[in-house]
Length: 290
Ligand code: NDP
Image: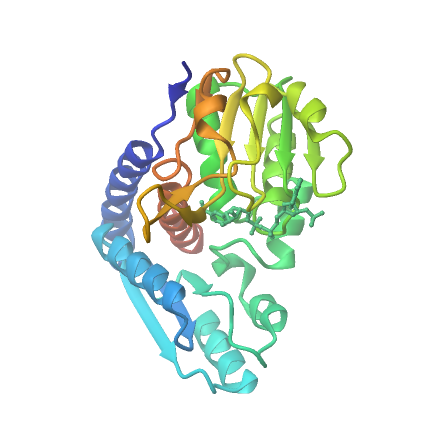
């Protein structure tokens, strides 16, 4: 049976070390690191995410600035807020919760964020920095996956990695991070021919697809390390109930893999922890603290 990679415990330890880093920052800079989160509209899932981010930010000893705007906020008003946050010296990180309500241009809003405050790593400057090996901010979910992989495997150099999914927020930055670690990287997607055969060659498999339990145990190389990014809500055995499953069929995969992240409790908790990590990093860089 595979070892379980406990993302919840790893994220808790990371949050503790961030809180120590925050205390150091406060002693040196005389202020707290600040994270501004902008939520437009009433999307229920986004409200939960924003509430959780707020709580985690405060728990880490940082300042949390929350901006809740009405769904009918205009593009100009939203851009003006992002520009004001760019100029605000108390704000080190800016996150605009996606998706934005219809009628707002997500890309224009994201690209307005100062790349040095882009703690979500979504601006083209941040993705370009990742691509070219310059220091910058990396999207939180793939960054969390990389931390779990390095904790499990140490040096990743020379390993063969398959990333299933090529989204801008998970698959592509994940592949770039693995390339930066000198893995030999394959990016698979919906047009990949014979996906099981592609996956079977990999020491590392990262599944970011959004299809419940798609990756089966007999697709895996024995001993592979499997990172399951997927979060899918499916009907549970008990009528009327639902449960969360990943993109990997945990039951069969855990019989073949060397190590695997569970869903929930694997990658999920790493995302907010990495947001705090990026915010502390942004604050340290802005104050010139090593
Ligand atoms: P997207 O829908 O943006 O991308 C999915 C990718 O999977 C696409 O590149 C698509 O290929 C590929 N794909 C779809 N079907 C198949 C298939 N049958 N075979 C191979 N590839 C396929 O999703 P995201 O990247 O945003 O998210 C992926 C998953 O991760 C979701 O379950 C999401 O909920 C979860 N997630 C979890 C987070 C966390 O904190 N743990 C954070 C973000 C996402 P193509 O490009 O060809 O269409």
